[in-house]
Length: 383
Image (tube, rainbow, N blue to C red):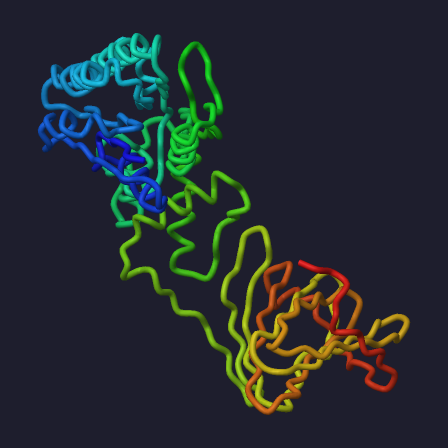
């Protein structure tokens, strides 16, 4: 399937093409501002789908709005009339406004609407699109904020309470490819199509989030990426960080038993750590009231023991790296882990809260090894 992408070197174009390149049955014809329109005319008979993304956002002269948005669309439609080629065109919510940019987009929409009387055509009025590879200091305040904050430059927030509606680049691309594959648009209203999900945020809220992301880059703390918008904004921000800042040192605590290192602290889902234990080393022999952990032996051979601090009932698991098991450490059970192998044991640990030495919720008590019930390695819960 040969597809045409106009505006191929733009923000949306680069992201769309990167996804199309992952599809084995798609061949891409690109068109950008330095190309002659002859390139389209020479290829058009083989084109099966068109993504018309080309447009002008920041011209030197306002007449360029009409040349790049309206005239190019008219020229494209004239070439494909009668060929029944499905088309997606990116417009803007600005098309409803009385400015030269909006008017040029509205005129382009009207040209495509006429084509849509006899052909498949989809007009997407895009809200503010954000994501990787968006050019800063151009037409996206998020790209500018990300770039400036990442590079220790000032940003200007005129009205922190001003609300904006945002859509994420991967959601745009996913929708476009879905339509190319024959599916219906997610949201259609009054002849226009829109991307979902949409996020309504204030400018001040976004600026605060980006500054918090910057602070996290120099530590092992990461944001609450379980929230969909936070996840996408964080990924966008990190794409503007220079590679020299991608490596952060972690503190490795070493003693005669081995070492222990906190890897990542999260704002909403506890923390992750890793420990290295020499043969014969026993760690733990303590319990928690609220803090719970999960142990994963990723290298070596270990025995994990538990004793209920009230009933005295004791249990143990024997685990090794030949069959990775995730062992949950329940509250109210003192527990330990012993390296019973001949080599170093590596243990990955998740904890449901951040370690606080002033309120550690950790109390020493040995595991009772006298009456231990060994638990079957075939665990009840399957992932």
